[in-house]
Length: 180
View 1 (cartoon, helix red, strand yellow):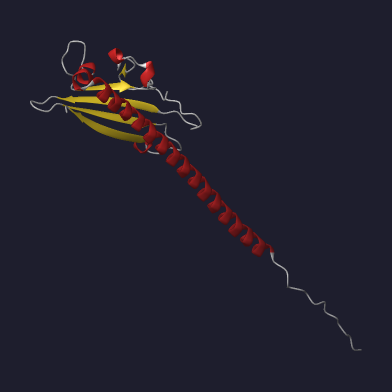
View 2: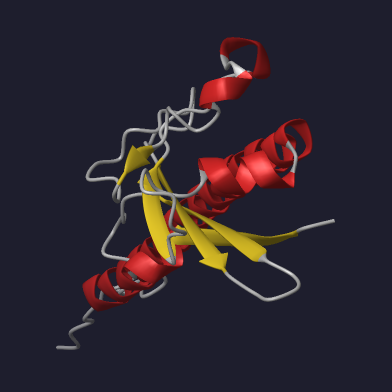
């Protein structure tokens, strides 16, 4: 007797479980890399926006002192930046959360809004920024025989996000003022 055995042909054209798992792993790793890159890009864009705002606020601080130098003249400008006893300060720090407009500020008390000492909190609110800033001003009086000099340094900082370096979150601008 001849027996005819029919063998069922096995179709191997599909994917095995290991191939599917490997492909899923590759796709997951790719999506994770894209998401991390996108997150980093958004954070970098925010930091760039914060830095631009900080530069604007630092420039606003310097512009105030430039305006007061022109408005008051050198003698009164320098006198307003010296202490009550009349002796020149070598270096003094102020917290400047807001700067009044020229119309809100009488000439006789030009620097009365300055708060002595460093800012303790981020109290400079910028509309739409999503973060508050602090603006410190350092006034350095450099006495000289012929040419006196006042150096104004404005430092604007904002809170650190995602553990970044605090020095990275600081902008500092300086201006030297001389007797004309």
